[in-house]
Structures are given as C-alpha cells and as structure tokens.
Amino acid sequence: MLITRLAMAAMTMGAVFFMVGSAGAQTGPLRTQDLGNGIYAIFGPGGNIGVSVGEDGVILIDDKFDRLSSYLVAAVAGITDKPIRFLINTHWHPDHTGANQALESIGTLIVAHDNVRRRLSSDQVQKIFNRTVPASPKAALPVITFDQQISFHVNGDEARVYHIPNAHTDGDSIIYFVKANVIHMGDLYFAGRYPFLDVDSGGGISGLVAGLDQALSTINDQTQVISGHGGVTTKEELQAYRDVTKAVYDRLREMIAAGHSLEEILEAKITASFDEKWGNGFQGLNDPVSFVRFAYTSLTGKAE
Image (tube, rainbow, N blue to C red; front, side):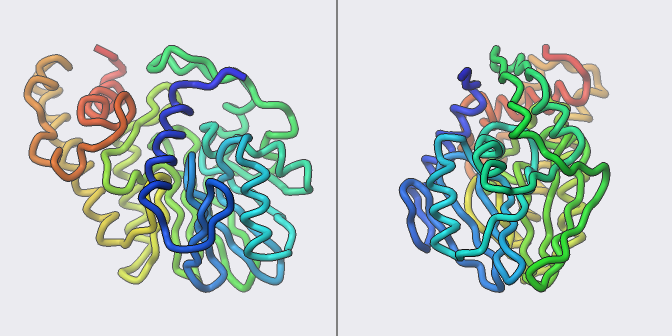
C-alpha cells in the first residue's frame, strides 16, 4: 500500500503526542482519556479520536491508520462492551479513515460529508507531497453522507455535525456534543501549532478562519475541545489559535493586494512574531514556511 508523505507526517505527529502523554488507560500505542458525560478521547499515532458511549452504543469520530484497527477496537472494549454503531470521518486523510474497512466488517455504519466519500472513492493526488493515495475499497466508504449538517440523537445527547467548507480540506466536519459540551475539531485544529492547509484537497485559509469562527460561536468557556492533533484544550486556547490564523491571513492578503510575490512574502517573515509559540509544526506540513506557502496558494491559486 502506497503511504503518502502526508500519512507519514501524521504518524509522526501522533507519535510525538503519544510520548508527551495523556491521562488515562493505555492499549498498545493508544491512550484513552475520560472527558466525562460518556465522552472519551483516544490518542496515539495519527489523528485524535472522539468516543461517545452510552445505552445506545458507541459513536466514534475518526479511526486512525488501518494497522491500528485492532488496538482501536480493544481500546473501545476497555471502555464499554457496547457495539460501535457509527463512525464519523471528519475528513478523508488516511490517519483519520484508515480503519474504516475494519470497522465496517464488525457492523459499523460510516458517516461523512459528501466530499469525503468522493475523495475516498478515487485516487487522490497530493501534488504538494508528490504522492498518490489509492482509492479505498468499497467497504471503507461512508454509506451515509450529508451536505451541510446532520445530528445524532443517541446516548442521551445530541451530536451536531457541521460541514466546514474549504478549510483543512473540502470535506471537513466538526462535531459538537451538546449535553456533554465537548467539540471535536478534526484537523481544523492543530493544538499549539500552525494549521495545515491541504490545498490539493480543497483546503484554504479563508475557509479555516470561517470554520474556527463557527466553532467558537457554538461553544462556551466550559467546553472541552478535542484537537485533530495535540491534546484536549479549552475555548480560550482555540480562540488564540484562531486569532493567530486570522492575523496571518490579514497580513497575507495585504501583501498579495500590494502585488508581492510568494518569495517576497516569505522573505518578509510575516509569522515571525508568532513563531516562538506556534512555529514548532511538522516540516512540510505546518511549519511557518509551509503554512504561509499553502495559505498563499489557497488565496491566489498559485504555488509560486
């Protein structure tokens, strides 16, 4: 199986977080954190997973790489003996969808935005990484898709799933558990780092800022925020991430409007005042130069 540089970088991100650690039970390379009110987070290589547990069964948000599927099932079994009824993919990337087929084989219904199924159904060319992700098998595809919003009324809660257009990708969703007051941000949120904009998959900085604004307007100061990569944070931390993203967005638009080239913008180091705190991203994904480069491409359609 051909693994993209994107998947390898995501694997590294998960491994780094795993070494930092998170309170809770451990199943192989995965670690579980209890957030209360029937909601859990599972960390390890790849994207972070959200779990809703209750009398109606289990809802998973994302599922990591295929090679971790047995560990994932075991981690859920360590929480509850209820079946995994639904899986929501926040977007199509392999570190969030790789175990789809394994979960489908045990009766899980896969749900995602229309564009997630479309991308998983065909080879995805990642020009920015010079790689191709092969189409997923039929069993790994979402069987329930939606356009703008869908809700799950299970486990004594309401899980509201909102599509966020053209942010990290063109198929992103965020999921808000109303009663538990927990939101899963998918890869709109890289906690403590700059965003990663997958411009080859329809991602863009303007859509990301709009999506972060929507999330912030949905939650309150007591909301627990599950990042796509990183830890569980607060609204205050998500607000800081949004403010930095918006500041870079505004500086970039001003320089583009003034006729500056990408080379000139990079030389101006428009992220410099933020780099000490936010600039420790992963090389080629969301380090300062990559963030500006992908944001520029998303605004101009030009890679240079």
